[in-house]
Length: 114
Length: 510
Image (cartoon, rainbow over all chains, first blue to last red; front, side, top):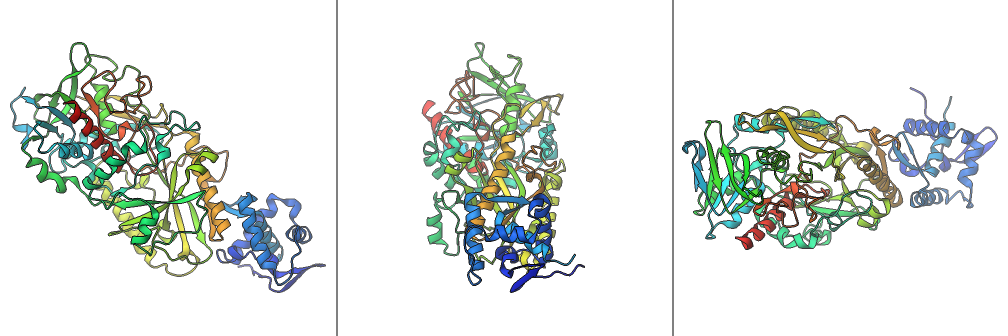
């Protein structure tokens, strides 16, 4: 079985550092195990190969609003709800997901050891 | 009064004021309504008071198109009809079910929900249900443990259900046989309907059973109450005077056969526990709810009316599609296997009490089928033991049916996300938006509807708003065959309401 790394606190990947909560979709963390989350992240990256880097995903997840360390999780949760409200959703392996949380999964998958 | 028709002499004549053909849910509901009147009621039942395989075999037939249950197994052919093993789920049709919707071809009834409301209330008495009240707040007041998901009420609402345990055989056998003015004939299968010379009204019906004897029944008014498939079959098979059968001038009899699509379609995974009894039911449950799509959301999304019910996923994963389980011609054997699968799944599910799956649910669709003239009942070249052509059912679905199911779960997934309750996962058959095919094990509710659809225009319907067959002044059809659209709820409550409305109408005529 592959080792799964769940980012906690600030997480670094190459030169890019980001807050761990950015790669941890709250609702999905209560539904999936880490392996599933990584697999879904892989699916997302396959569908959107242009988002297959930490830099790109962090940039997209940080877009639009200043994300403070303390309020990051809440900000992302609000954004996820807004995604659902405005139809910014996609279906991955049957799961109806918000674009934001799917990107979080993708970022999560990039943090896993190859 | 009860007469076993097998003891009658060959060519015996049975006479009364009204003749009800079929002692199932519709026929008994009407007959009960006539007890104590000054009119002589003839109630003809093909079977006896218990299961008889030779009689049941008269329901055999062939099916084509979308896979369907063995026809012999889908109805019970004895006094009390299919209430002998029904689940008792009752909920009225919604107002939108009765109106014309421009996105649902050939939708619209010539009557409204308001027209049926007083009869729904009476049907509650016949089916021994609670008060005719399906308002969530009413039940929430009665049963405080019914906690609803906090979803947008403009999109999702809680459609309430009540549960009947009425089995008409046990419940009404004594009332019917003890009634002086109701003459119940068992083993009296109607095999032909004969019109008068100008073909404007029914003169008599021919009755047979396995003794080989034939009888005639005459009355002022005749009510067909054999179930949607058998009513159509009988009208089509009554073709000695008109080759296309009776009431079939415009080739509508048997068309628009509809079922309820009842299928495991998705999963709901809650991100945290949500204790409620609102969405589950079992023995003794007075009321529960299904998640339903509002009229506004149906209109905006141009979809059919449907609901979603929740089963614990640990249980749902142990279940098989009823279409695969209910596959024996003998309804008793199919039922036995059906209950064994459920029992095994329950036993396995009891072992799963922890982990994420304990707050996950299998989502079951319950949705109307769009009216489709190509989904139809015709006659087979093969005949049954009494000489009547057997049924041939071609069940056919449309893209609207599939798109509607998919859209319902997309809406639900969206709402669950907005509310932060959890996530919805579509089952495989709904994932590709371009895929309009159906799984071979697609489930149906054993609900037969639409084969003698109601419309005031004879070119669009077999019966008018009073359930009278167009062009035949004394022939009526009772039951779900008259439905112009099939709604989402199980049909029995509406069927009884419509039958009582017909009963009132015929009383006014006689």
